[in-house]
Image: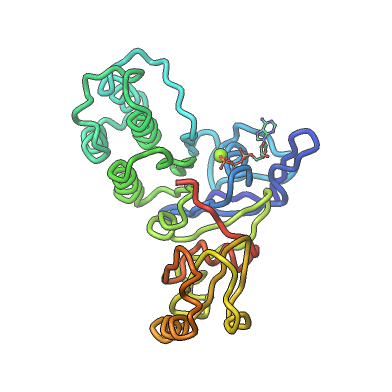
Length: 286
Ligand SMILES: Nc1ncnc2c1ncn2[C@@H]1O[C@H](COP(=O)(O)OP(=O)(O)OP(=O)(O)O)[C@@H](O)[C@H]1O
Ligand SMILES: [Mg+2]
């Protein structure tokens, strides 16, 4: 188990991480979620031993954090003049993990780029190389900072597959801005804001804490006659319901529907959990 207790970190006067505790078991994928500046990258830096916390501890069951935790950061900076296959082969050899090399290259969709120089790759493919090299390090714990941001939908899926396929017995901590992705990928999520935990648990448990089958969302003010059934927040409102067809009929019959923009009816998700706990909408950046 990788275990962090009461981590805090200040940069100047700013508290980037505040009294954050978390644990990652082997075989488990944990999502660290939160808006820009919430403290996700700082947390990963401390978990990997690259940044010393002001207070709190990071420990692993056996051995040294630096030896068994590998981290793949969100910014990719490759000056390596090697070709993709050469580079990954080097990583595999250094880590005595050559049997995984072919599978990783194929699974992540880099087959067509074996002979391309790493610096000549597109940003998305550089990112794949980065994640592949993190996996080839054979870590017991792998920290992935926004592995899918900036990728097209197909590449996101490749990366998600790679995370699912190669990480049966390693512990993963992954950050993403996509709550939907976290629902798919993670056994547990920890949502943080301003450096501190807001809520944590399995996506299913968190989502089922919302006591409605559906949520109707729309832009604008909540119509008269519906005010006691919904909540408003910065130009949007939502009404929870188990019977959306009846709610729609009421909105039509009262004429309220005419003034609503961007109406949607959705099953509750982690974004709604964030809204429930913080009172603010979680705007995805991608
Ligand atoms: N080296 C640093 N020096 C000063 N402030 C920093 C430094 N690193 C992070 N911060 C600040 O700490 C806070 C947390 O930053 P961090 O990068 O951990 O957030 P994040 O959750 O990873 O955000 P993003 O989603 O944008 O990647 C921010 O307010 C940031 O400006
Ligand atoms: Mg970050």
